[in-house]
Amino acid sequence: MENRNKVELHKISKVFLNGDSCEAAIEEVSLSVKENEFLVLLGPGECGKSVLLNIVAGLMEATSGEVYINGELCGGIHPEVGMVFQELGVLPWLTVRDNVALPEKFRGMSKKDRYAHGQEFIDLVGLHGFEKYYPHQLSGGMKQRVGIARAYASDSDILLMDEPFGKLDAQTRYSMQDEILKIWNQNKKTVIFVTNNIEEAVYLGDRIILFTAAPMSVRRIYDLKDLPRPRNYTDEKFLQIRGEINRHMDLVIQ
Ligand SMILES: Nc1ncnc2c1ncn2[C@@H]1O[C@H](COP(=O)(O)OP(=O)(O)OP(=O)(O)O)[C@@H](O)[C@H]1O
Ligand SMILES: [Mg+2]
Image (spheres, rainbow, N blue to C red):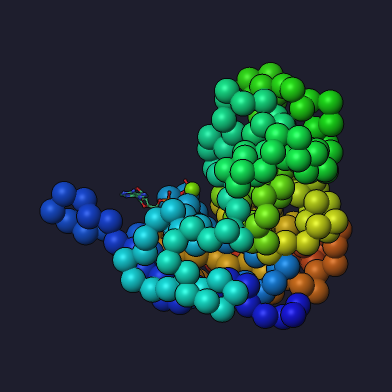
C-alpha cells in the first residue's frame, strides 16, 4: 500500500470576510500526499500555509473544496491526523511527560499506561531525563521536541507540522531537521511540513509544493525523491535545486 494517496485536497478555497469585503486566502489548491511521504509546503510569509494546514487538520472549514483522508471524504478532525503547531505547542502547566501523554489521556488510557507509552517517544526525541520538567525549564528546541513527541505518540499516521522550527536559532534548527528525519526514518509516517525556508524544504522534502502569495495557489511542484539522503547543503545538486526554487519564489513575493 506504499503508493496510495493518504491525503488528497481537491480544489480547496478559503475566503475570509473582512467587514464588508471578502479576502481570498486560498484559491483552488489541489494536491495529494502518498503514504509515508515527506511533503513540504513552501511559500512566502502570510500566503496561507497555516490556514491550509488547519483545513487539513479539520480545525478550520474550507469555503469550498474537499479533504480526503485514506480515500474518504473528511469533514472535521480525523483521529489519524496529528499536528505540531507553529506556536503554543505545549501546555505550560504540564510536565514533559504529561504533555506527551495528553492525547492518550483524552482517550482514557490509565496514567501508568500512557506514561509507559509516551516514554518511547520522549526517548526518541532525546528528552530522556527531562520527563518531570515544565516547559519554562526547557529551551525553545526542547519545547518543540515535546510537541513532536506528542504528535508521534498519538496514534496518528499523518503528521502536520506548521513551521515547527521557525522560531529556533540556526544551529538548533539544523539539528532539529536531522532529528525529525531520524525519527521519520525510524518510524515512518505521512508528513506534511510547512516552511517558508527554501533550504529547509530541499533538505527535508520528498516533494516540495511551492505556493504563490495570497491568494495562495500551487505554483510549482518539485520531486526530490532522487536526491539522495542524508542531504548536504553544499552539494552541487542541492544548490542547483535551491537556486531554481529561489528564482521562482522571488517571482511570487510582491
Ligand atoms: N481567522 C482568520 N480570519 C481572517 N483572516 C485570516 C484568519 N486566519 C488567517 N487569516 C489571513 O489569511 C492569510 C494567511 O494567513 P496564514 O496564517 O495562513 O499565513 P502563513 O502562510 O501561515 O504565514 P506565516 O508564514 O507568517 O506563518 C493572512 O492574510 C491572514 O491575515
Ligand atoms: Mg503560518
